Length: 527
Ligand SMILES: Nc1ncnc2c1ncn2[C@@H]1O[C@H](COP(=O)(O)OP(=O)(O)OP(=O)(O)O)[C@@H](O)[C@H]1O
Image 1 (spheres, protein in one colour):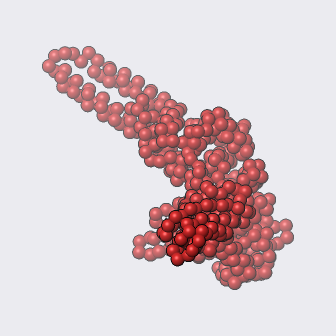
Image 2: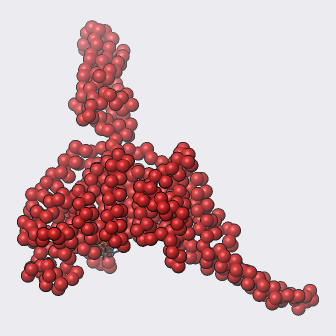
Image 3: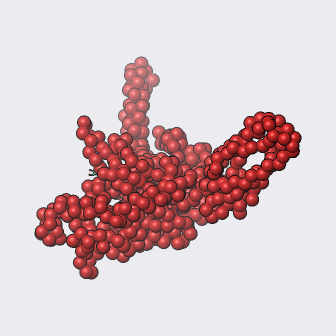
């Protein structure tokens, strides 16, 4: 019970401010409720009356100050102590994250026409569960992930509600991670260096270097990369990590700060089935290992049956429409009830994707559709889903989440301070410049060759009047060569850095200014 004593000695209208810092966690029940008692002593001639909201809602995270209005009436007699008890609901800032989307439409404008990419999707992703988004190529999986992560391209417009914990809110830095389809990393750094630099950028300055390194090592071990810690990432023309290891390293970068919400765009693309299972099972067991009820949303092309079993919920799309959304275990029943049972000993995900893939209609009619065209099969499934009990349950679940789960997420995560970002980016870029053979060693050789050529061409140029023209030519030649070499030499590493910058900026690791400062300082010695 929380008690507040207010003394008032005259007729007036008072406002009592209550801040959530008055409450400690023991006072707040599991449902986020507490009771408060307010007592007020009035002078002999006044009478206290309270006018207040029936239920106060305090938000633990935002430290807002709701007001209690207390009206002091003049006509009453005698000393009076009024006491009132009231129930207060304290909305706790939550660590867990639930994402809901209702009637989500995404359109892309091409000229005067607008093409719908996603058509009225409704669904949710809950903490502690993995939602798999599946469908044929081009059905809108990445677009759905981009919409939920709030990173749609400027050509795309979305309508409908996307809510985080029942509210329209921007997630704080470090709360969510997004592993993109493409692995954007610097090719000359080793796996360990890639993650250590990332740790220095992502963790706050208050954390010691040893702690950051330890976190990076733990994460590398979690993704089974301890053996490849000293292997360079590699890229065009230089072999390094395998495709699967690069995918895992990309995942490591995004899970380093232990985000509560994780988006993965085809984390297993380019991997064989054993490696796919290994990567997905590591992701699925992350929650068990670090004890965080993480919300995971992943798009995936063709999971093996073992990988499919790791998913809790399934969102099956075809041309931007929902074919099925609900528990992954319920999809079989849904397809069977619509006349498309999964053959025995068949991988269920293969079966679903073959039924709804109209890119190769001819083959499907001959093989899997059993006389029903893919177009017709999709139409049947989409219609059936719209009228299904599963959809009703999804809609009521979304409604329930929005009504009962409405609260802000914690916003107390920070990353490295601006000077640290500049320093780390300069160090990282310098290392990349130095190790890039085409950039450093090749340029050094070219410079030596040019120096010898210029030296021999203008050797013993003389000191008479005729040498003035020669000296002028030498100067122009020298400046042109330097400018050309700087531009050509700096271009290829910059392309790679730009890709990495694009990813890191979208994930909030640092901004444009820090990147430009890092690039400028690291390039100075090579100009
Ligand atoms: N900028 C754009 N302009 C026009 N159409 C676009 C644009 N971006 C995406 N699309 C279209 O939107 C559809 C969905 O694209 P999206 O990348 O979300 O598909 P996907 O299911 O992730 O495909 P994949 O599995 O091959 O990665 C595709 O048909 C694509 O051609």
